[in-house]
Length: 101
Image (cartoon, rainbow, N blue to C red; front, side, top):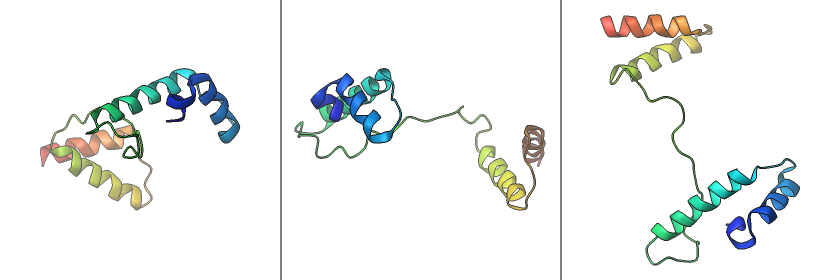
């Protein structure tokens, strides 16, 4: 919202002063574009009062085990809660056991 009203470089300076570290102009530009898109999608156009946060997209790889993925995650979380260290080979072994069962 700030970048839309004041421009990208002014937003960079503002957030650097407020947060204490520099935010790249490309990040500000992307957030501004996303905010504009959300404003356009709102019914009536509004003044931006309805847009509370821009949010972010999904992160990481998509799940590849389908409905087994939740069971693998639960089993790994149980091991972690018991204090076990969880390297990748443990996750692979748990996934194999879940698929075989």
